[in-house]
Structure formats: C-alpha cells, structure tokens
Length: 243
Length: 203
Image 1 (spheres, each protein chain N blue to C red):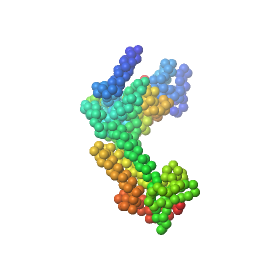
Image 2 (cartoon, rainbow over the protein chains, first blue to last red):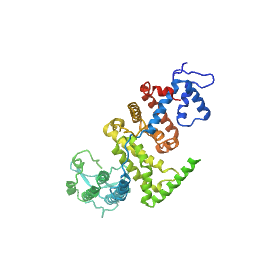
Image 3 (cartoon, helix red, strand yellow):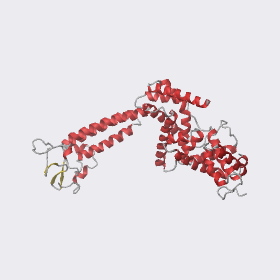
Image 4 (cartoon, helix red, strand yellow):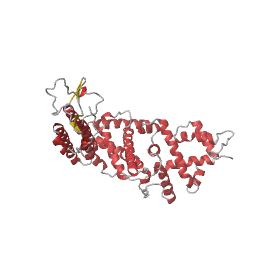
C-alpha cells in the first residue's frame, strides 16, 4: 500500500485517500468536522499508518501542552500587591499614565500660550554684518525689520502668527519651544520610573521654558544660559535666508 | 445544557463583580483578580518565558484593565478582554527585547522548570518529549505561539482567540495550521523512539 503522507494518494474503494484525509486534519483537530467526515477520517486512520502517525504527533503535543504543570506560578501576595498598587498615587502604572497625560497636557498648553505670546518677537540674526530678521512681519509687499521686538508704534504691521506667509520657516523661538516640548515628554517618560524624580524633572523643564522666554526678550544675555545646541549656527554664514 | 447554564451563571456573576468593581469595591476587584490571575500568568509566562517580566506584565494588564473598566463592554467575557490587553503588552515586551538583544525571544528563554512530580509525565523520556514540544512552541512566531497556547492550554475557541489577537478567525486557523506543522516536524525525529509505538497504536 502506498500510504505515504504527501507522496501520492492511496485510494480505498470505500474510503478517502491520504490527500483527502490531510485536508481534514485541521478541521478535525479544531473539533469542527461533521460526524460523517469524522467517521470517514477515523476509518482511514485505522488503515493508514502514515496519517495515523501524523495526527498522533500533533495530538501528543496538544496533550502535553494542556497537561504540563511545570511552569512557575504567582505567589500568594500578588493580589495584595496589585490592589495596594492601585491605591498608591504615582507608583501605580495606570496612575502614572494618567498623571503623565495631565502634566504633559498642562505643559503643552503653557507652551502653546507662550508661543502665541512670543509670536511678535523674532530674534534678529547678524550674518556677515547684515542685519537679517529671520521671521519678518510681512504686511502686503513690505517686510519690516525690528530691533527691539516691539511692534508698537509701527503702522501697518501685524503681529499675528496667522498672517505669516505659509512658506516661512519657523522662528528660533518656535524651534526651541518645539524642542522643549519634546524634551519635556522625554523627561516625564524617563521620570516615570521613579515617582520622586518626576516633579524634579518637570521643574527643570519649566526652568528651561522660562529661559527660552527670557532669551526672546534679550537674546544677548539668554543665549549664554540656555544650552541651545544650535546656538553656534547664528555665526555661520549661509544658514539664514536673506529676506 | 448543564454547561450552558453554568456558563450563564458565571457570566451573570462576572457582570455583578464588574459593576461593583466599577464602583470601587475592593472585594469585587480582588475576586476578579483571583479568578483570572493564574490563567493569565500561565499564558504570559509561556509568551515571554521570563518569570519577572511575566509577573510585571500580568500586573500591568490588570491595572490597565481596571483603569478602563468604564469602556469595557460586558457582551465580551472579561477574560477575553484581559487576555487581549495581556497579549498586547507581551508583544511590546518581545519587540523591546528583540530590539535590545538583536535576537529572537526564543534564544533568551529561561531553562525549563522541572515538574517535581506535578506532571503525570515523570519519566526521563516524557521529560525529553515535553522539553522538545515546548522548545518548538517557543520558536513559533508570537501570533502562532499565542494561538497554540490559547487553543490548547487555555482551551479557547478559534472565535475567542480571534478576539484576543484581534485578527479574523481564518487567520487564527492559519496560525494553528502552521504551528501544528512545526510541532509535527519537531517531534518527527524522536517519533521512532519514545513516540514510535504510541503513534503507531494511537487511533
């Protein structure tokens, strides 16, 4: 009898052959075979050693997987620890997630407010002796350079962020704030491992934000304090568009 | 019919516990944890193969489940929902491990714990058989491994497994098909020794 699994089919006069039986293995193992087909498969299995062996290998595996008790188990205090964790602020992971969201949301809101506040104030850049306003305030066809970051008394000039041309690159302050937001997120996530360090890191990021705000008012002094990685870029020619 | 009624009672009791848990009842929370922690831990341990990680993931799964109890729909079994969360955290854990070590999770597996008489299979041959089967399971892709564990060890239906893995039922069946082929191939070399007589006589 040529009953080799996958090597040609043996057709019995009244029953199925190996290739037919093979197609029913999964349904049989999933418990989804109809009674009629289950009987046919059982009959073939009695006659065919190869199919009997193939099914038996899988059935042995399933028995072992079901019955094996060799894995470790949780200790008896697991539930107590879990419930204690739920009642403890900041140490609980789900509370950390929620608090992280609240804190970050507040900081992000503060950053957006600061951004809106600083929109009129764009730092000037000096490139090769030419004073260039990186984020000019444009009304109509005119561009206006300003030294003192003040828009008061300047007719026809608007300081709304929305009125800037969409093709403009963001100001240095906006870039710094975007980086600050990224750093705040990183600090908060890093601080989640130690509940006590979270507030310390938040304080640090707030100080950095204040530094950015101060730099917008007085770039000469503030850039010395804030460790902006792009600070040296100000002195490099060719990085700023001539407007 | 008896199983159906028993299942109905369980579901009713489960809904009662969840209602109370939502209200902050500690006893209800404890009952839900105690009712599912062993099965959940067993599944997670077999997925990540590290006791410490498995315990952490188990804890995180419960905490996440309880933190979002308001969004849980009682039309699904609590265990299905819990296992879904646990499975997702397992995947994140396995991805992180793979990124750190650059190896498949199967290579950082803890050594097998001896049965110490707890398993009905006590002979050396039986232990070897068990080890080979678990080694084959550990080498499966996470989705295939999860399908095998949930189907054979947790005795869940393909429909429930599909909900846990959040894939179609056909995908679950495909996972099981491939996993069975792998298990068969893993046992084939030793089928002539420990398994030989048993396989030939089975059926």
